[in-house]
Amino acid sequence: MLRIGLTGGMGAGKSTVARALADLGAVIIDSDVIAREVVEPGTEGLAALVEAFGADILADDGSLNRPALAAKAFGDEQSRATLNSITHPLVGERTAELISDAPADAIVVQDIPLLVENGVAPLFNLVLIVDVEVETRIRRLVEFRGIAESDARARIAAQATDEQRRLVADVLLDNSGPAGGVEAQVRELWDERLVGFEHNVRTETPAEPTNSGLVPADPQWAVQAARVIARLRVVCGGAAVRIDHVGSTAVEGLPAVDVLDIQVTVADAGAADGLRETLTAAGFPSDSSEASHAESGGVRRRHRSADPGRPANVTVAVAGSRDQEFALLLRDLLREDASARAEFLTAKRAGQAEAEGHAAAEAARVYRTAKDAWFTCARSRVTAARKD
Image 1 (cartoon, rainbow, N blue to C red):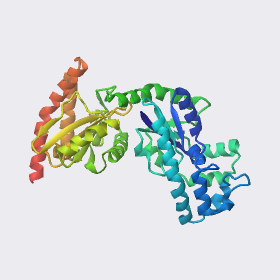
Image 2: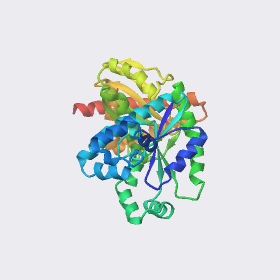
Image 3: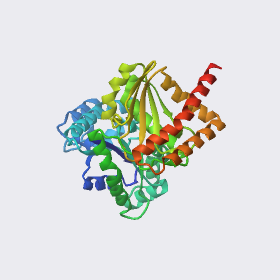
Image 4: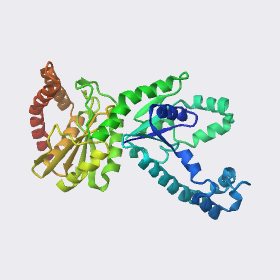
């Protein structure tokens, strides 16, 4: 099962995207719909609200009078907290039921208006943001929903900013164009990323990079790594002593293969072994092509992302072990020393030139071997620098 978080600012067209995903076969779980269901007449949710806020929050037919509830519940922070303490657990329970009922091979899309505001983006395998500039959204709300402009602006101002949404977005769906444009983007995303991602998660298969060559440095690598790290913090919990972006993509301005390298530091080998199944279930399967190995002071376990759209290597290493420390020291050396960066880039380009013409597996081996000599020298350099 693949779990997708879907959100967007008011008026962005999130419902249009949800319908397009449903048409393609996704299981849609709409938080707004669930929030209404759990307080329908006869539910424990409505009974609890009446007990907390009084019977005058009911309409004549016994249903919830939402404006009357809002007048009471949003008057102060304590009342708001009371409302949330009643409704949030019920929404969570119903959501969990729907997820449990979904097929094992489902692509489950949770439509959550306040996904960013509630800080739940790291709980999903992927986050989709429907992206439209504020002024366009305001115009749509006024023209198509009949909302007063001042009200539209006030509601949008109370939500996350576009910048905050874009920071958590694995995928931005631009819905500012003509009708049908965003649906085409959804179909392409479904075919080229989501179907493969779900298959890889279910079959515990790492995603293969589409390009193994060096590419120019991308400022988005740091942002993308931060999203992967946020997910890994949730997955690893207290087992992770620290989680770091390492490798070439962690060095600003350094060309690299477009694969993120993330290091999860744990206390001991037992913690590394304990994370194996947890990481695999979360979409970071073990990398069977590269055997995990023991070393002086610890072990290293390698996992890789199942996401075809964002390849990543995740190494689990024991704190204080030689390789764990070297990954951090090398990254810092490359960040701080321009001559070291130039030498490393020369070694990488030479390795890439040597690997050209070989089959993929052999090319990867040749490329690694070519870099190993430089790594040996670099290890001596960072060891000496640490002693100084």
